[in-house]
Image (tube, rainbow, N blue to C red; front, side, top):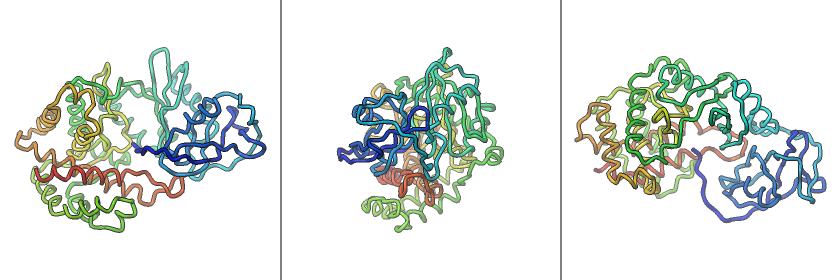
Length: 413
């Protein structure tokens, strides 16, 4: 999940707008047309309003995240406003360009759906960025989703989960590991739109069943990383002590001070969690309720891109609870219907690991520790990362640290 910020600042940017044939681009005179867009805004919507053009966004040049560049879009028809015309032009690819950022992406989507045996009556993008692309397709049998990733590991993980834990994920219809894509049937609606408490409890139960039954050695052989808790007990405090590194992630100074001042308390919480003596287990890696669905198969999990072969099980579950109980999500249907939701979900987790109710405060502390765990993992993954927006990296590290700072009070409970 890549987080956007709201802004009303307007900027003028040149736009590369490809013809549906992928050979021509729109020009004004002989230059790329310029468009006034809102920084952090919706580029596709702006093009629709300004030029009355339906498009697929291929690359937003970081505008959604406050950057300035030259976005690329694919027109869905050959009609242009009067002040623009088509010109055949050979453009260099983007640096680190992904297949879904190329002008022939729509053709590629159609070909992949056909390879999967899917008779799509229509398809449209859900979202895309440097790491992944998701396309929704309508078929006579219902919705299906084509996901393409910059790394093939996710496809290996999904094949394993679909084969060994078919009740845990949506049906896998096709998977091409080397090409980095998969097609899955719909698993229903996003869990965070569901008010039924039993759906949430089932999501926890199926997640913990995966944790306790999946083969760590097999996941490791497929490329899943391991973050043993004994190792993370040292890495988290060391990471928080590296002020230059935290500043390189543009973490606010007051958050850095708060986290560093809390290091003794964080260490104590890590020691208490270690005292439970729960083993390191396989993990989903990004188990929040917008990566879970509820439908005919019950509650299922998708997006296995961050699967781990070993981690403390509360790192998955702490993130799930922390996301769900965030103050900004007070209007979730399940929270409106169940004011005691935290107690219900906590009980489900404790029951899964045969822990007494007296350990509930420690699971609360695990929410904070899960954010810190994620910050360390994402720093390792993205510290030297380069994409096709110069100077931009996925902002998971500062997001995780801001949330951890907000949740520090749970460590003192």
